[in-house]
Amino acid sequence: MIGLGRFGRAVAATLSRQGYDVLCIDSDENRVAQVLADNIATHARQLDSTQPSALKEAGVFEQDTVIVAIGNFVQESIITTLNVKEGGVPHVVAKASSEIHVKLLKRVGADHVVFPEHECGCALAQSLTRPGILERFELDPDNSIVELIVPDQFDGKTISDLRLRSSYGLNLLAVGQGGKFEINPPPTKRLERGSAMVVIGTNQNINRLPV
Figure (spheres, one colour):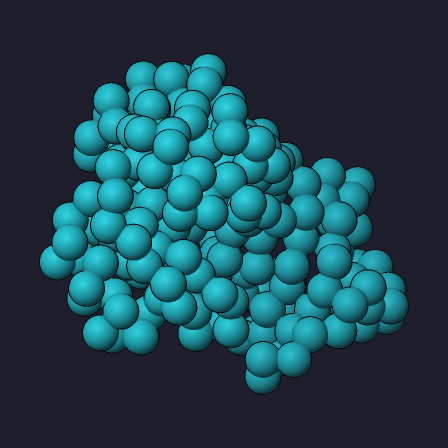
């Protein structure tokens, strides 16, 4: 983890809680000392990530995945991402702070770019306009997997009654009740108000589902 602002620290803390060995790096000595004091990182180093020699000496190039979380300092973010990719790291995730930043990070080789502010804003808009959707995983800009509350119009109907594929162009993956899901439920499965269903399809077709 390179960059220990709010985003980087949160990702590092979550990975650490899940049992992963996290090496944290930041140019700010106080941030480095704090993650060590809070037991967020197994190892932490204070260094300038725009210097390839410093990254190599710290063992960054030997990692399978590196997250560059220097979102608010565009030049440092781009140079660090380039350094890490040229150092041979197979999977580099980088945080962006603008659309142009996204394009630049991809240009220098980032394997995956996250734009938290944009993604959070989109998720908020979706939750306000489609409150029945509990979770959404975007496969690409046009297709998603979503978990949603069974609409009132579907209450008491079987899966075969709904004809989701022919009527909505969607495939039903699972039906859930009380936090437990049945994968690939049979056509005779009857849906109930308040339970959950997981479907896959285009965003356009998902938005056709009753609210």
